[in-house]
Image: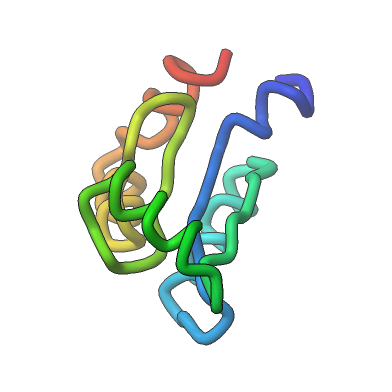
Length: 92
């Protein structure tokens, strides 16, 4: 994967969110580079997050154009062995 392809992973976060840290660690462990969008003190980005995902919570993760959801969703996909397939399908 080129670095340009890997940047297709996007994660909305806040600084005080332990689940955000866990999600970023999982993505990094998969060798993925991600574009982090902090919604701390940014009502415009927070509204964008809600419009795009339908959720007010962070983290919210996208791989390519596919909305994965939060950390629990990301971890579940990894445990089920499905995350690698999603990565391959949406980034390669």
